[in-house]
Structure formats: structure tokens, C-alpha cells
Image (cartoon, rainbow, N blue to C red; front, side):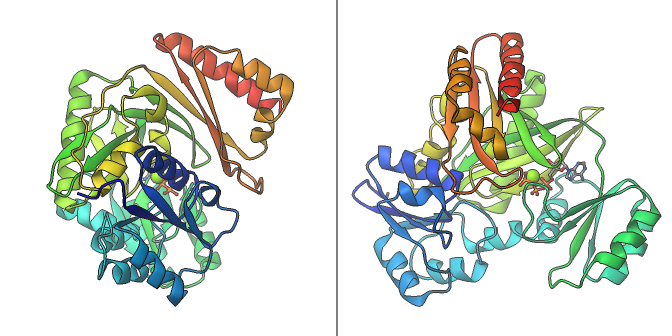
Length: 380
Ligand code: ATP
Ligand code: MG
């Protein structure tokens, strides 16, 4: 076990790294955050913040030396960096898991080989393979870069062959290529947070229901409005996937629910997830406190839902609403409201700048309040 007189290292210092830092510090741990972006919000909370590039040898030496366990808060961290840290200190989840999940082709390959359901897909390693792959899958399709995408970036919806030939002209060869996926005709998007310990113990959170807008998560509801039987199936599936992956740490599995109640796995995040923010205010253990337990080889806690909740992301300029006196007053007059401003330095486009969680016993009232919040955010 890693006890609280030790230090935890986090690669990446965005909002997920920030909330992990806070959870670890509440339990007494020291935290070191390494992110080359000097404006990354977790720097302000860390005991030790490192702002050099990830290929800086001195920083690497110190980071390995000062931390008892290391994790990362986004999957686009170089696998080679994780592998060199892992040679000396535990990294959870490890480099094999990271390598598998940071490439969509490998991720889908792992899932389908393991018998887990995914949408029909084909790897496209060269732009010249795009047209034939599209014709063999049929429309509608989504083309995604195999690596480095997030929040819907690096994705193209393709409705017909003209769109494919158009995209073919635009694509420049890239080392890891693309994945072409059949669009799933889902009735709901769901996600489940799963933690797995060093000893293989697994716990799962209540299922969340997620609504995306232009590829970015807009709103997340916990618990999802689904049957107890389906929740149970998702918990079982989540445990099986992370166990097959031999992952240690905290994960999120994104799912599509189809009309016939069949499930498809969209992707697996080897880290806390935006749709799990609501666990901070709605569960007796947040995804971040659970992650600390998994990282430090402490017993995991089966989470209990204390209250239904709705979480809304605050995107781009909407953050100005939280920084405006009269809008803030109106927001704070809503019962069960929890505001989070990540204090990111630059407001850019639809960047995730903060989030709002509403807790309350009546799901209908929560939905009505979520609409009120959305109206207030528009006033920014
Ligand atoms: P995030 O960082 O939010 O997880 P991402 O860039 O990793 O996003 P995905 O999760 O693959 O991308 O896609 C973002 C959203 O686009 C999905 O949540 C879903 O709404 C939609 N989407 C992606 N792939 C498919 C698919 N095959 N069928 C239907 N919708 C899809
Ligand atoms: Mg996703």
C-alpha cells in the first residue's frame, strides 16, 4: 500500500488532473503534476508542479524519484514516457493498457477479439484505402483519426460516397492512420465508471446517460433512465472489459444503447471521465477519491448513489455567466446547485471551462432546473 506520507505523480494537469489532485490531497498525499502547458489548472493545486516538455531528462529523473506511483489524466501522453517511468515506479494503468487504448484501431481490435460488442469498423492506414473501406461498410460512417482525437476533434461524418472522395482529397498521410466506423443508430449514450485494484478487485458506478452536442459532452444524468436489468448488464460488461484489459486504476466505458436494448462499446478511457464529474456531488465516493484508492493499492469502496444528479458542461464563453454577478446570483438561487470554474487561462471556442452539477430527489425537477441553467448560461 502507498500511504499518505508519499507523493502521487500525475501526467497532465487539466480539470481531471485537478480534481484528482484535490482528492489525493484531502487524503493527505502530496501531489506532483507534470504538464508542459504552464496554464494547466492543476499546477495551482499541486505540491510540486513541473512545466517542462515531456522529453526533458532532468524532469523525468526527478518525477520518477519523488513519486511512489504515477498516473495520467489523458490518454495522449507518449507511451514511451510511461514505459520509461514504469521501468522504475508503478504507473497505473500501465503502458500496455495505454498503448492499446490510445489508438482507436488497437482499442477496437482488443474489444472485438475479446468478444465485446463494437460497431462495424475498418482500419484505414493509407488515404488510398478510404473509398474501398467505405464501400464495404456502407453508410452512414464516421472517419476518426486513429490517435490523438478528443471532444470529437479529428472526426468526419460521411453520408455518401461524394463525402468520402471529398475527404480522401483532404487527408494527408498520417503515421497511425484512421478508423472508419459505421454510425450506430443509438437510442441513448451511456457510460460507466469502473475502478480495478492491484489485486483485481473491481467496483462500478451507477450508469450515466450522456447527451453530446457537436461531438462534445453537453449534459450527463446519473442514474441513467434505464431498467435495473440493463444497469446490471452494463456493470457486468464493464467489469469483464476492464478485467480482460488487466487494467489497474480508474476507467470509463462509453456505450451506445440500441433500440433492441443491445449495447455497443464506443471507447474506453483509462482515466476519470467528464461524465463522472457528477459523482463528486451525488455519490458517497467520487471517481477521483476512488482513483486514489486504486492507485495506492487501498481497498476500493463500492460507491453508493446519494442523490440523482444532472451535470452540465460549461463551454467556451458560457464561463462568463459564472463570473457575472447577476447571473451567478440567479444560478446560486437554484436548489442543489454546485458550480465549478476550472480557471483555465484562455477561453477558446467550445473548450470545457467548468461544469455545473444539480442534485435533487426528483428527476423531473432536475431536468427542469437543467433547462434553467442552460438558459442562464446563454446569457453570458
Ligand atoms: P470524447 O473525448 O468526448 O470521448 P472523442 O473525440 O474521443 O470524444 P468519440 O467518443 O469517439 O470521440 O466520439 C464523440 C461522440 O461522437 C460520441 O460520444 C458519439 O456521440 C458520436 N459518435 C462517435 N462514434 C460514433 C459512432 N460510431 N456512431 C454514432 N455516434 C458516434
Ligand atoms: Mg468519447
